[in-house]
Length: 535
Image (tube, rainbow, N blue to C red; front, side, top):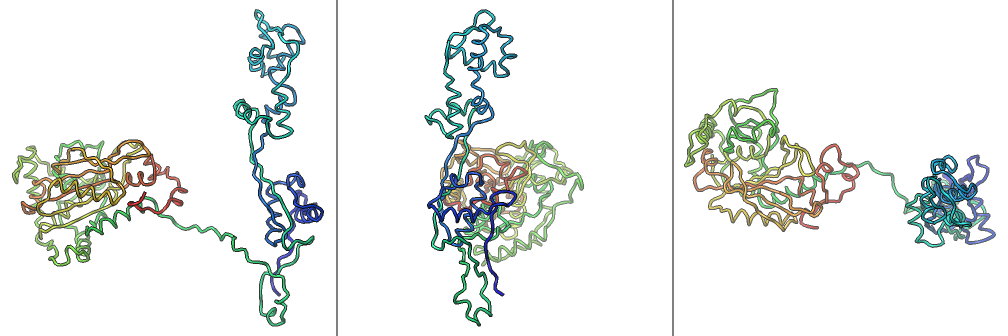
């Protein structure tokens, strides 16, 4: 037996005594069009809409939606409409008694006495005589009550300009009203016909399909909502950055280690052991285990780098790095000598170098620790190279609109012969143009491991100010020479956070709305795809 769809009653009352769909059809039989606000004043908008949709889906009726705004009285406004305005009550009480002490007014008039007294003074209905009130006007017109009575009857003001004033006084409010104009449709009938919803074998065999009244397809019906996953804006912007780096033949550095030793995080980068960045208030130290062993190879990182270099156009014709040639013990001695006594043309910091300080474990404060590992590895086969990384770093900072204790750092390293600071500025200009950020400013800065150094600023239209979006510089010779790299091989280093370009792109003014417990999941699910080179 085929599936069918017949009449679906929509009761107008909760007890189901009236079928609203049939009431609409019978009303249309005698007049059209009909206006639901007049024909069915006691039916709710939801009930009327449900009935009309059922009839319209069968092409029995056609209807238009009419949106309007009605003015309705608040509780205080209704009270004034019924009893009179506050000022009228004060005047009426004073007139009837001739004289009322001010201190007794609230007992006679009620809680609205103070407001009514002020308005009555303004209207010059009453005056103050010593510590009492006496009437001034013999007769008054309660305009406020008259206007509210008009609103109560017609749901609008005679003069629309009066609405704002009465809204400020909290005597009226507005509500949206939806009504419908209904007329007969092409398949109008007084009764809802039965419709066939399925075509089966029996109907094809006996030919009943030729005369069957099939339910029409509703191509406008929405499907079931899908609880699909959504990429976070940071992931979208991160992927765009990766494409930009890969298009310029950069190799992605392995950055899986969030915890690193003080040696790789600070010492290799020529950061002195007394530097403020190494204080507890700036760096998160690991308590268990508290120390690492001496520096050595990382087989997992080396394997990942070998695979990336094999796929790179830049390294395809060159020999792969032979990490067995690396002498980590000598590298450690070189770094110690640079800090303590000075070496490779540098006078150093000239302080007693602490071996224990180098072994402390920290949550890495930058991915430059990984860059140092990759550059040291490059010493086995010095050649032009390009590395990048995008991963999480940690700083013990106060949280505000533009800073978090953990964030994502984007870092790029370029090693080549004959590099200059002007070349770095030119490269950064082209790099940020690919991100859709063309208005840059450079400011001289200090970094222990780069000299010269520059901060990069971009203008954030949401915050209305220039925001630091990156840091850059040329790695110091005493840092590179200690690794075993040749004298004429120089390195650019530049870094920026992932969060700030994302804030600029998506118009987010507070970084805590982008990452952390205050993130709106609706924003994550509905944000558009990102194109960094487009506005």
